Length: 79
Image (tube, rainbow, N blue to C red):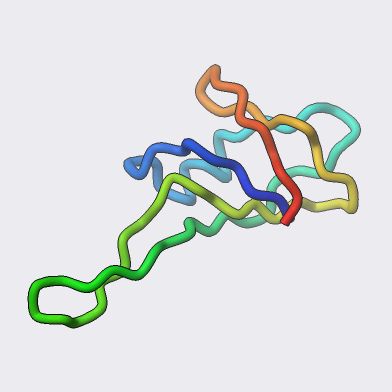
């Protein structure tokens, strides 16, 4: 698993998994999950706000240094 940052919130996880490209020699992306942060609203009840960080699960044991999506290079960091 690895984390990629600066992924627009408008991109859905299904769209990201199908359109992401991984360099050769590394396993493909199996699953994506967006991280959220907890914030309190005016009524002091918790609200979950989606962030631009996404956790990717790869089909393999090696983490690629970068992944590519929509002509953008995104660095992958270990968890």
